[in-house]
Image 1 (spheres, rainbow over the protein chains, first blue to last red):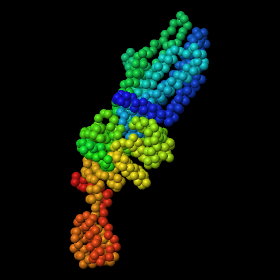
Image 2: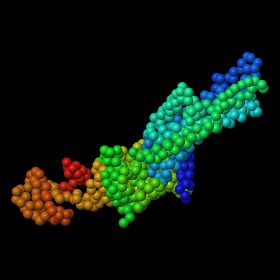
Image 3: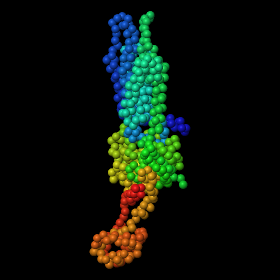
Image 4: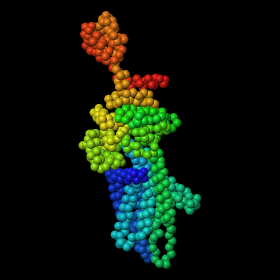
Length: 276
Length: 316
């Protein structure tokens, strides 16, 4: 058996074992339940606003399915991506040190890289499962309210953006999990980077009017998930409208670059780490 | 000769100041049970962690079955079983689930694996707990499950780091029995401990380590010979006179006599057990009424302590 097929075998084993552990812990069932309940609740909390004036009413009615999807996704998608990534990625490597289970797992005939790749994929699978569930619920809502033909095509692009963003968030938290020996510290440091450092840099660059140069910041592309829906709004013929075009391709490329860089860096660090 | 375990000039440093292992070279023959003894912090666990690729040595080499463990490929660990410190358990899993995963890692086919898990859980007396979550396990049970994981794949080499740590006397007895069984199955067992008494019963030889250096290496036979008594404590039913003492002093092999009290003497002698038997026969021939005749033994722990005391004394 070649080294590659060995590695793939052990990665698959690790993925199955880790995902099985997630299922046993029942945490995943709780987040999946949240992923179903929150978008449904948001339907009642944020109903689609229909203005009084004729043009406004017409535009709102034409775009009601899109607005419905945005209202549900805007909060639930981000909340659930962060929550699920924290729950499943922050301990992926830290836990082996903190709980000393690495003393059982590492002295085995598998490369650590395979173990870590499996753990990363298991965390990612958990997040993607939750994100997929949210989009299924939102799609079902739109169909239920406006009929099958009303599903915005941009919902697919939005899902793609959410999936890519999930990859980058999981990678960032996984990276910190490879550095710290406590899952809680990994989680807080990951959140610190996502909520303070990256947005802070973006604000700084905007203040310095370097907004065209901040394409490489992940935070510049976070809103892509709903922006692709916004830009797909339709307007009555002849009516002037302007929407900010979301840089979809660049956004996805930046997200996947963050995912790869943080995953590779995290795996490299974890692989070099002594199990003291 | 091919050794099951071998290290050559193994060094592990943490930073510039602390040296955990300082030029450790040791050899363990195949099929032997070898104790690795030293006080806490001596470097025992560090050595075992290097042998299981958990940490990388700063210098030197370590070999398992002749294969350099510092090579990137982890396949050599397929023939090694290990129990290191007190490992954590996957607390949401049952022993069967946990061992099934590790069985797949060791590529044991499904049918053999199910059978092997039953066997091994029975061996470590956890059959009744096979499908209970490990979060409910006591320390002793967790330790036995970790031993089950270590021998699940029938390794050639078994590395046990303080295997009886935290166990009650019955648990210690069980672990000793298991080690004897593993030896009978032909495994090479390398066993670390900070108590000589714990390993003396099961080991063929012992390596002593202190402050990252090997300070002595002996077979258990050598140690037993060293511990063999050179003095006999004899208690008489009536007070011993000076004449009696003079007569005993004239017995062949007797080198000196300490008078402990009116009725008790400590007789020092030269030679082994046959000399002691002859002294007893000679005393009986003198018509002295002997109440007890005991070898004044040095315990294994005394030997162990004297070894480390000598080592620290030599350094001062």
